[in-house]
Amino acid sequence: MDIIQTNGILSQSAKGWKKELNLVSWNGKEPKYDLREWAPGHEKMGKGLTLTVEELKTLREILNGLEL
Image 1: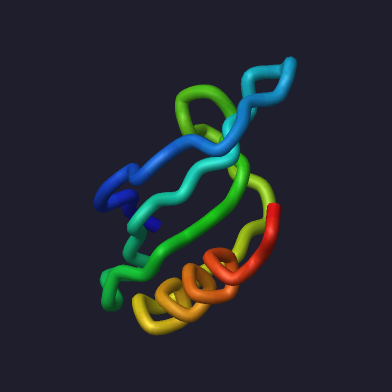
Image 2 (image 1 turned 180 degrees about the vertical axis):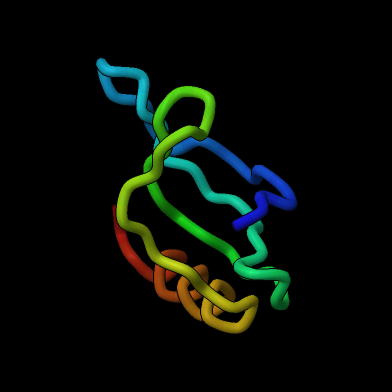
């Protein structure tokens, strides 16, 4: 997996793990948006969620409709 672009950090744990939204390419395939936790230095990663551009747009619409 290659991180093409880091789009933002949502949070950081006391142990230094960061929840990040990145644009990634898995095995040289079309890049997708990926939301997961990373250890410092990106040496380890937690389970995550990978989204296409269309899925990310739909998620944005859903979030914009929420009253937070």
